[in-house]
Image (cartoon, rainbow over all chains, first blue to last red; front, side):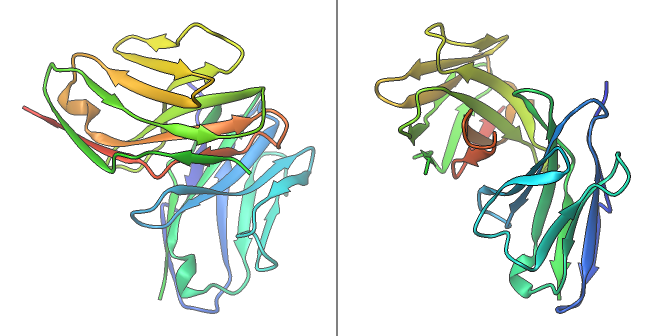
Length: 111
Length: 115
């Protein structure tokens, strides 16, 4: 069964460093999303991506964040200068029409 | 903006019993979807069940069923014959068809199934 994959599973970085989180969506899906979940809190929407551009973004998704689909298969989330409060699980999801399929998540720890 | 509220932070149930998790939401939309996701300790998000707002019939998936009350904006999840593997966080989520298909999640209910 096709699934969404994410790498790395755990990323530790120093405050102020850039990180890139990678996702491989399900191959025939057209809509892609990033969500984050701070430990013990609810899952929050960051950004949606369709037809090679951002379709929606939340207030969390400020200028420090960017997304890209560099090669038609990968879907990346970049955080330019990480802050302590960026520590969270980051989930990628992809969708063909309605149901969103989530990847296993990347745990980001900012020290 | 949509909001989703889960009023039960934690619940427990005996194995083989039935439990109901509550969810309410607020929206001015008429066309939308509602979902229940399960998040076990692995933190993977797993879709349990979904409901289209235009359908009056409540969705059912094996031991999982919903009670969708559109006028009351209520969407509860019933788990029958609870199993130890049902122990997890459960998130209710709303998706508007007209707003980029993003999911808005509730705060979650931690369910513990006791042997």
